[in-house]
Length: 429
Image 1 (cartoon, helix red, strand yellow):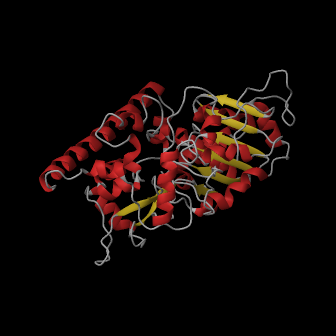
Image 2: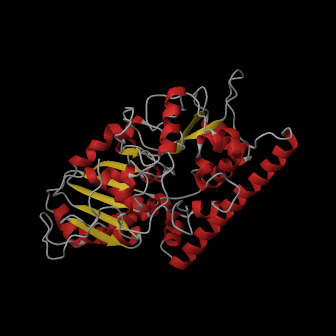
Image 3: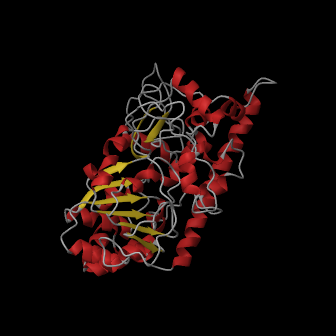
């Protein structure tokens, strides 16, 4: 799956399917009866109005804040090797992000409405918050490419852990362990961590993207592969619509690409109005979240931004506190001259037993250019351009790695990547 050129299509080039490159034209296309299958691809941008911070926004995302802490790298909180040595920072985040605290946005409700109208073929989401389910999107129409909080299990014996006990542990700020006395392994939600194989569901269902009559991409930076390659599977000549704060990937390079730049919810409302679905959408949404939450999400954007910033700071402070406690414990317990947990994680990332499936790895830093997505396919964390990581991955393949059929990463067929041909179907949080 290569990446297309990201050059914007010339304005003089006429669309092949749409009347013009506008949401009104997209609405006319849907109303024409030609659209039988709609594929939706979503990222963190559709959940920020719910109060869930995104991870990768430069300067303001969670990872940007975690970079200043005593971590091997910002993504270490979601690294399976780091988690094995120090699960506390992750569970600080889990306590705040666990389902139940947040409500679906109007964008989630729009996807549920597409399903109700029999138009949604498949939803591919990078989000782990389960808000699509809560909005009413049928489970058989969702591919949680990066896993979710919906289930949890032991990272060693893979036995599922009871949901009620998981909630008890999280609310009490306790790290859960396997109930099998002979195992007692760490338990974590079925979120695919860096260093874990991806679920098979993603690779099994990703070809559905090529069958879509219309594809909607909402709130994603398209920097994490293989999810970022999904829009390239869309058949040429079939419209792709981007709802996002900025242009990403190759979107905008095809004649029938439509860019609805701005807040996702605003773009979705505009499309719903053009379709004549605005009242139906609002009713559906309010029935799920209630008037108070709907009014909050529809309120002042500056206030929402401040709330998100406060949430990121709160999460960062919690992780920092957990790290300080762990460092103090390490200094007490480790013999003089022994390596710290961080050093051990950095020197050799050993993972548990590996099932079939590709290993999730940390993506390269995002570059400040529209061509960065093209380059990332050629020089991704899985390509020959990073020989040290490649050697490390090959070593892991020989020894074995963890397997968590998790909802928060991408599912794959489990074919091993060749020594020279990078497999584009690899992902990262």
